[in-house]
Amino acid sequence: MKSRPFALHPALNVFLDALFPPRCAGCFEWSRDVFCARCTTELRPIGAPQCEMCGAPFDPLAYSAPICAECRDKTPPFLAARSAFHFEGPLRVAIHRFKYQEKTALAGRLAPFLAQAIARDAILSDFSPQALVPVPLHRARHKKRGFNQSLLLARELGASLGVPVAELLKRTRDTPPQVGLNRKQRAENVRGAFILDAARFEQNGARILLIDDVFTTGATLRECARSLKIAGAGEICALTLARLN
Image (cartoon, rainbow, N blue to C red; front, top):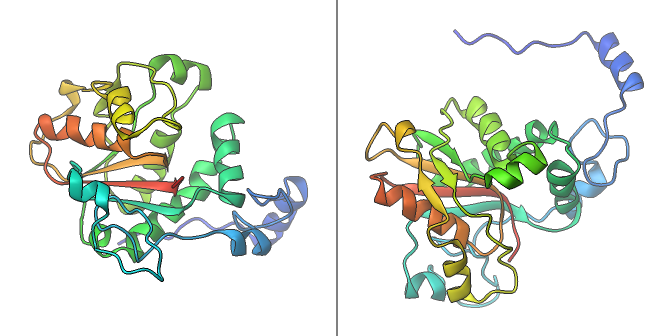
């Protein structure tokens, strides 16, 4: 039998709200929810029509094949990649606060959007991963920031789904940003940047869900998935809070 979540007395909630007023993660106005009503209307979820593989949004008014040109040209090493929202507006503000202003409590408030993205996608909802694997930071960047935002999101999502989190990958190079690079340059930028922590990889053929905060060009997720595949992983999907393009 599942235990019921602990609930605070209503009077205590009122007291805590007065002492520490809950704020919208986008505009900082009072809001018990992660985003206020106004900011919620500015969020743009990503769903169909989109590439069945990389999740690239398609123009709903244009005829499109189920697979985008880039994925047709070179099949990605993952089964599917999905993002909850476009990387803009209130969500962009929230992610920047989370990553660069040490607002780590936002992990617990933003992770439910990942669960919602899984629930509304046919491929991810049927995937049933055996492990959640966060995209790692290079040790220098991790030391500077103090935490890996992808790991925090994975832990929150894993707790809600009942799926273990496995830090299977290590980043060997602190790669420069992908923005502004062409497709070939993006691939070369992250080529060989990830290695498997063999001591942690215990189950060949395991279904893995990669977790990251933002899908920028897709090259990082592709390289992570490629490294896991070489090591013997089974099917791999990827999930991010937001997508830049």
